[in-house]
Image 1 (cartoon, protein in one colour):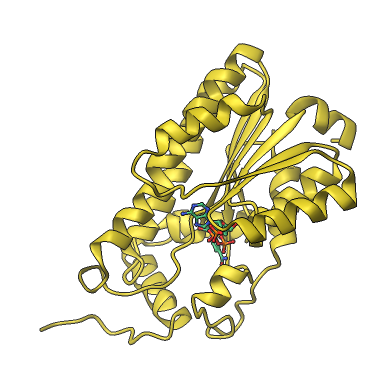
Image 2 (cartoon, rainbow, N blue to C red):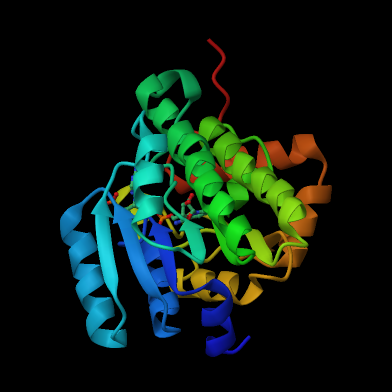
Length: 273
Ligand SMILES: NC(=O)c1ccc[n+]([C@@H]2O[C@H](COP(=O)([O-])OP(=O)(O)OC[C@H]3O[C@@H](n4cnc5c(N)ncnc54)[C@H](OP(=O)(O)O)[C@@H]3O)[C@@H](O)[C@H]2O)c1
């Protein structure tokens, strides 16, 4: 799709949740380069302002920001306020990484609940607000950023994997509901990507031989190119997605649990007290 056609279909403005760093910042770059105005959301103001300044200078687009914790308990009210701020043709729900791993019962409950709020509750709140408005206009797009971890249960990342699975399944259903309405809903399944969040989380990018971290730009560009071409796009490729979906479930869970442990430097053996 040409930049003009993309801007007509998904403009005039995109809301990027988690748009100050990493994959979300790469989405914002790609969209601004295509001429879309932007609203960027994250918790910390300084990186948000820096990213907004950069995009204004580089692309001459209008960018505003909102410092919001998407895992906050009253997020549905914030979703309404933000949605009323502008007319958004595209919603990118990107924030949602795990920031660490560990056995479920050894992790603080507050952190596990925050993961569910960030990836499930707030996702539903924003996507609902966005789609109600897009249906009235009969145009628009929604991208939910999920993870390969969402393709199976995973020890050490149990809540994260379950929450990322929610996004994939939600996008599939909403894609079906909007297929004839000129509204594209898609899940972008990211693979291991070198982002500031993952570096700060202590992810060991070289832990698994043959597995190389992707760049945020590769993920965002691939996802934006796939928008309008189906409910799910996988950064690791369709073959990797098909393999995960047809693999023996027990073997897959065993394998991804071991990978999760390796990536975060944990003992991969199952606990048996
Ligand atoms: N990186 C990977 O290896 C990888 C692999 C598979 C899937 N993914 C998925 O890709 C997406 C992006 O991942 P990422 O590695 O770039 O890290 P991320 O922490 O999910 O995203 C970073 C961006 O989101 C913001 N953010 C994080 N938590 C937030 C919250 N509670 N409220 C508001 N904003 C928040 C960050 O700014 P603030 O910190 O200032 O809030 C920053 O702008 C996630 O959905 C993740 O699950 C990543």
